[in-house]
Amino acid sequence: MNIIIDVKEKELDVEVKVSGEIDAYTAPKLRERIYSFSEKKGIKMIIDLSDVNYMDSTGLGVFVGIFKNVRANNGEFKLVGLSSRLIRLFEITGLADIIDINSKIEGGIQ
Image (cartoon, rainbow, N blue to C red):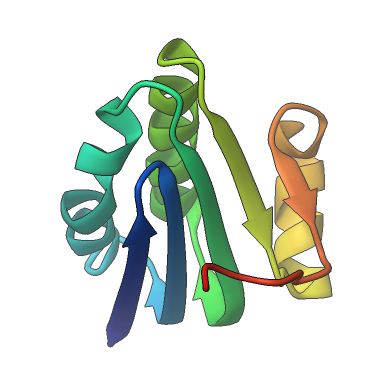
């Protein structure tokens, strides 16, 4: 079970590209790598999940925690590139109504 986490940061813009699986074994690594960004005031965080082929409830928990922290610090949080399977997971849990899950990937940090 592997996960690759690529982070690009420019001032208050943070882009995170996640590849692999997000589960009970890899979710702590993901949280450890990106949580500190969520503590910055006014951060704009975009997480690209287009190369994530599996995610369980542990992964959802990581994203909920980061989302809450970003919002508490007046920031923006968006998930992009979700497969139909991941979109369904967010819809079933009701998180799609709370977290911005946009399936389109737009321009990134230059």
